[in-house]
Length: 400
Ligand code: C5P
Image (cartoon, rainbow, N blue to C red; front, side, top):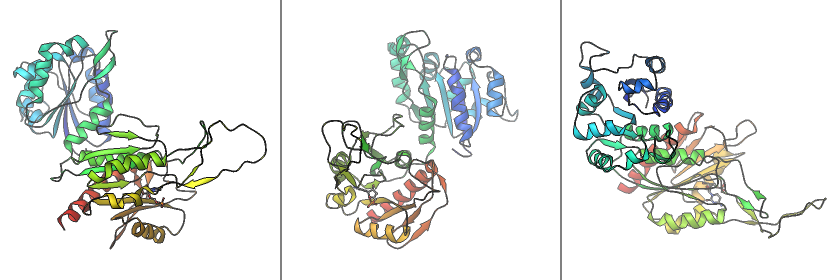
């Protein structure tokens, strides 16, 4: 997103206010955004808001121009990396489908050579109208045109149904996807994330503080590279729908079953889940408060990574994580060899730095013949960096 140029076209729907959040997401991620809009959109959000948040005057008419030496509708659809229409009304979809160019937004869309992302928003009856259905179909079949599906829920008119504008983070995610150059190989990734829960009784469990953010960040980045991603996750607080299949499991045993089912098909396995190594022998009734101490008998859970060794193709890539409190490198090296990993991502856990559940992480990457220490960075950024490295390692392994 850093340094990318985006034309954000706002049309006249009540959800225009959500485009403010979208604009902020683009700007925070480092994109340069030129806001354009229809005259109708000005009834919902005024010029001043767009100007203040984008840092440049928004444009609403065919005769407005940011640079007199250039023709605005050509520049805004051709000299940018992406055009995002959010919210996109039924009217604008109809105009774009037919090639009508009677205002700035529709003229930019007709002239656009950059990819275009539509985020539709309208009343359910308008969305389901055969005319809109046909227009969406026509547009979706054109190269370079993409859609973020509208969501179901409460609509401004008081009814419930399909037609709500997708949430800004979902539109942002799709824009990020479209702006990421795709890799020629389309690998099948199986990624695990989060903590497992081992129940002591029907209400209590043993677990750890993993939020699943590291694994999810790798999965998101792998998807943006064009990978076919499946995520197996323990129960996590962030349940935002992902654009790839997600299987939620509870215990280590359930995670093992889900992984073993999927792993024979995968090209890349990334085991970033913080799996419990021991589980209590589950009692059926809730433990009563009895006063005094109690003891728990714990049995070992299956080591999922080790269990996948005979199930994977020899040219598939295996990646594991190691969280250690001491002798990080020595222990991680040993783990890499025992679990037959191509790469182990090692992170030190201390009182000062606990990567589980935090937003940042500092890791050392260890392969058979190299070791690379990375600086402390946000997990989202680390996920992107790791996905690219892992993809390239998988491509090299396959070509050997
Ligand atoms: O041996 P240790 O549990 O420290 O190894 C960590 C790595 O092994 C991580 O990649 C983790 O996801 C995986 N693991 C596993 N099955 C377990 C425990 C950990 O696959 N039961």
